[in-house]
Length: 358
Ligand code: FES
Ligand SMILES: [Fe+2]
Image (cartoon, rainbow, N blue to C red; front, side, top):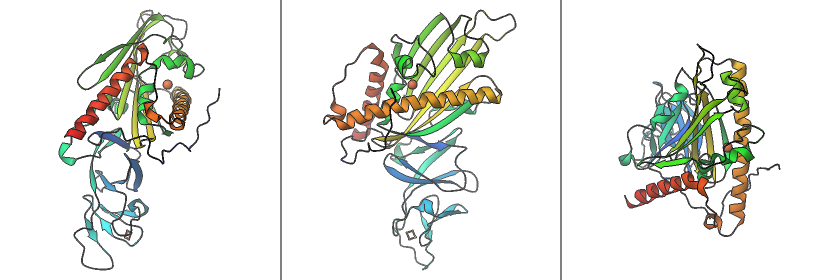
């Protein structure tokens, strides 16, 4: 079956309500992607422009000039300010207008909203909510792609659907045998994982003992597909912005002196543009420093194929949701493998409820 993604699924009637907390760290982009040029993004239904100041720190402003509402991102960065490309009004990183070329006086209301950003490679995180509620320090669990002991690769795509569809997808990996039957070829993930819920996170764990490695892992580790190993898969819903997943490989049959343990990790980053559209940014990596470029390229290509398969099925689900008058109130059949996703939904709902009552 081939699923054709379309871009006709935006929810113009507003059937799908926003389900993203604003008081939360969200990933705007990768640290590498952001330079001195203005970068225009939509985050949580808000248009923002990002740029680096001369000292490298990040400025984030609403991307709408208060004069005639031109996007500031169509202008240019001058020193630590951004100059609107329409009539030259200039704003500093706090959103204060510091120059109106046509007059000396600057009206007090001539401001744009500024947002707090934290550049913690590999990600630039932005707080889109109440500045007084900022939680110090973004999720720490996404730092490994910047670790030199890992060889990592990454990608980004725009998907049509609510961002939780992706987060639920990566919490129920029984889809491997169907969605990724010809790409990742992980065909033995059929049971429900063990799920644990803590105050902050929802985690799953699944163990595969005395089993074979799927092709990508067999090739990268040089273990091959014949030798029996133990695989320990575990992952977490860390926050609305981030899910992480890990595969530990234990090779008890390795030859003497050979490496016996490997770690593969994935960071799934979702940033809603609207309730029905999100950017999906991901990093994959092995704890193998300086992996050879051909192997690294194979990993990246295969991950791109696999994640495009996820995107296709998610967008197909989204089209079904949008075409049904019940939208997100449609009835679902819940089974054991949905437990992590259901717990993640509860975690999110609790966060949304708290934000509403604060
Ligand atoms: S719209 Fe920005 S300066 Fe006029
Ligand atoms: Fe998948």
